[in-house]
Image 1 (cartoon, rainbow, N blue to C red):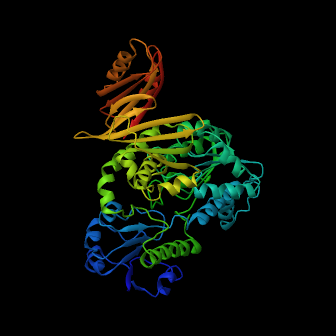
Image 2 (cartoon, one colour; image 1 turned 90 degrees about the vertical axis):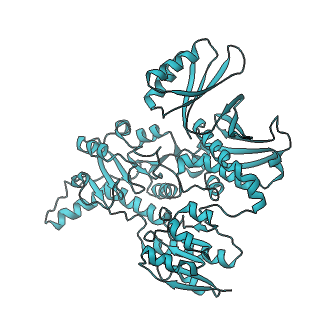
Image 3 (cartoon, helix red, strand yellow; image 1 turned 180 degrees about the vertical axis):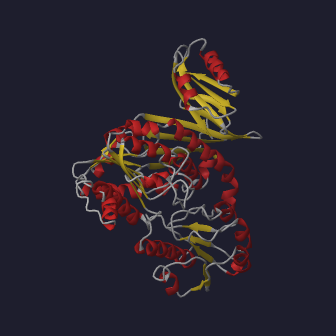
Length: 529
């Protein structure tokens, strides 16, 4: 059998060699297609390879009657409708590791250039100025590099910085002290990293939680004369706050490969001599372009000719229809329970235990486990976490995942329980589907509740004392926040207790702080599901 593969974006010749050498694969290169042109021919092909230019929309996927796999030669899959691909049984693969080395090297180039004023000195020399005294730099040796986000690229940067005899301290929501010790680097909270670092580099995805994570408050916590680098995503650093911090002298220099709006050539940061910048070149090397193309080409060949196995899938793989019919109703619940726990868990996760009770114990539940882990990780790692790669990403973070099955359901036909182990202890949530009512969270830690896992929730830990509930309600009323539902639970009279509130809108940080300061309140957590 011959499989037909369409390459619709320019890829390196070396990169597509695995496809061209495969005997069962017929390759067509047709770049620059307009959407209607692609729709007209896509039905002929078993596989489609793209970079970022081709937009693989739902309309195109619906016309792709023979399409089995879409390969993205790169990391991001923003140009591919993953939901439509999954619905039509099309697996999507990418190349998550191909640009790691190039991005890490670019980051180190930025750090070194900042330290020694290389671009500024070169520009001066080009303009016939011999300014040796003006461009005196600093050594990297014995300086502290603070890394915010220790994924693949962040870890590579840490290794290279150690080679320059820098001290490295890192913050990552999934970094533990033990893992940091193994890597030979320091471990700290975000504030501790900002306070200790002479150089700071960011390597997080751009999420709600990381948007402007380096803001005015963050700059205020840094050392005077700090230097900062962003080769990750525009929007992680508040560019207005960075501008003011440089002008004030707080920040000695910044190296930027990304901006909030791209492409851009007219930006006030570019007017500052303390800023060096490149036009999003982190992955722009010959080797990276070849590497991502080779990785995705090999994955497509393996999938088409090797029994449907892909190394780097980014959407849900197929499961038997009879199994899917039984477990699919629990997908939403599993993800929401994972997301719920991600808000309650403040320290790095070490172990995830997932317990299946009742009829679920007799089924293949690994897709549910992946959905649960996806919910736990997505808040910190972003949309590239999915049902298929969640377990892999958890493993890369040093997180152990365990499944347990039992016929005992404790009063429910089926019960799904998830526990998360951190250095601070264990947090637990249990959920089920109620006939005619849908998904419910029925237990949080040791407290029984009945909560729909949707919308805006406030989880309050407090002392079981008269008046606490009233004070919370009154303060929310002052903030014009309406309470839709309330669940309460307590361990014993006068002891520890909880409130679970469903409210009509998100509670801002200032409002949460006011709640925390109320008498007899232990902790308050806003949960957005």
